Length: 287
Image (cartoon, rainbow, N blue to C red; front, side):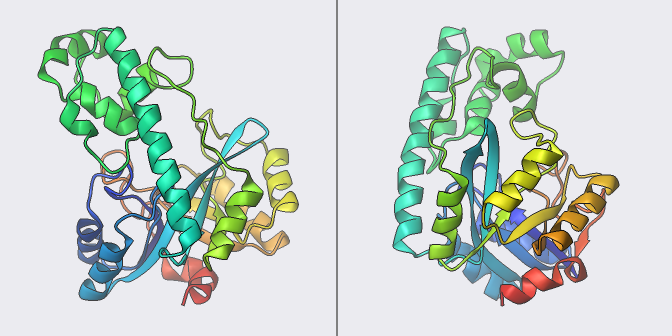
């Protein structure tokens, strides 16, 4: 039976609704699934109800935007009480902040000559993928997109070209909280605080070993996402050693957003599925 403890839905920047995510997991023989939308616990009730209906162990969670020494940290909260007043207040403020940021990026892209499909922005939470899709899905942009990219880009390709740091449509994120505050928030809601994708290859993350060890030793994290979609075998081995050395729980998550060609559900064990056995200790803590 397979496990994925890092999935996103339409509650943030995922493509699938919580019910659709559970249904997909059922078809693929998953036993455990966690919904950890960015700075949001929206639609968690739907996710938990779908889990019961389709007999999937559904874990309520959140992925908190944090930062330490000029590097982003995505702190995953697993097993939270999503009805916690602290979680609700945090999510509400960050949803507003994300929408303001998204609309600022839209204005910059419009000044750059892009047409915007407004219906793509009518969402609970607006993130960079939504802004990118608002450009890609506007028919008046097709000619320019083909000329610049050679083919119709996906949202990830467009983000890299236009709304990544240093690009024309980028607006910096200003709503990070400290790792200590993120951990405190998750613990206050009864959850486990996990460092997400610590060996990510993106410039925003890409921690040095010294940076990661400092995070582990300075802050009271409960676990480490040892298995992630862009961790190779050597990195998995290194992270397992760190987890054992510092008594951290080992988690596994694909960072699934519903785009199977980019990051398939559950594929986080060096190109393979993660199994329940790999995460038995953390699963025991979540039950």
